Image 1 (cartoon, helix red, strand yellow):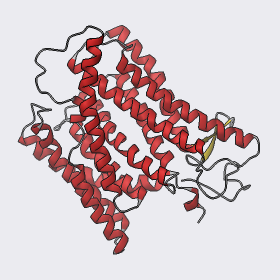
Image 2 (cartoon, rainbow, N blue to C red):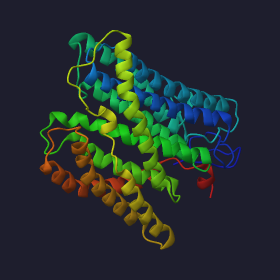
Image 3 (cartoon, rainbow, N blue to C red):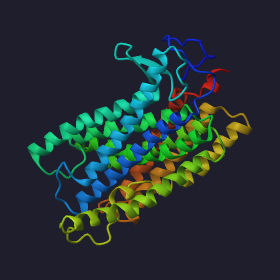
Image 4 (cartoon, helix red, strand yellow):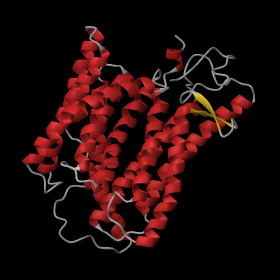
Length: 381
């Protein structure tokens, strides 16, 4: 939670906090949008890299898709570092620390004052670059790999996830401004797209259901509920679902085009027999989340206008969204021929597991909403 107080007062860590309004300065906007831009570049690079593996094949550590991956993380990291330095210099000069990015905390022996959201985003970016060295070593030992669940890849994915979570935290602390609300609408779909990839780490286990389906059925509902609850505005869930659809359309066009264009530029042919296979990462994004978003809007309307218990509403929203995704996502994969080995059994299993996962997603979405930094205007009440 964000802690704020009138100008000149101290928070619990002894840091001077700015006046009771989240920072709306140019620096605050540049920092927040810089972190978000970095996560977007990283996601584009990942989609491109996966498509490259599927359509072309030959791979080294130093490829253009990898450059996108690492440059996006570096961009988020530098934006976070800049905001940490701004807060640190203000604190050392005895000025109020700008109310931007969440509660300012003292780190590295109290030598730095870091807004919580930027601390999380920056730590993720730093870890990503560090684990990049592990990935380079892995490639140098084992050469080309075409799977996502290697130790270095899983470590990289966890690091990216931290940065994306940090981005949501930063914008959540500015949701009393329109640009902060827009940032949440854009940041949440990026994490909805990426988070299910973490489930690839479960591929080494004997599961009754594909791990990517499992991840999508859980993370999609949780993040949709979280985004709608954080914004607490009519139409928020629909806006997030529409933003996800736009992102899916962009990646659907860009990923195969970029892979083919890059391969042509360096004289490599595409694999034989690609046919009409859909682009890999965009095909794994839920296409029917808008249906769930409409249901979430109806449930949240009941909470706002009829006084229904918010804790029960988020559970219901998670359950409904989980069922929608659980039924439609495997059917989507069958329809677009993304997974050729899926059968009716997989659809039934996805629907069954969607019930407990949806309830858990709703519960965690509500809890995480309360954990996100609040604007100073809210914490001052």
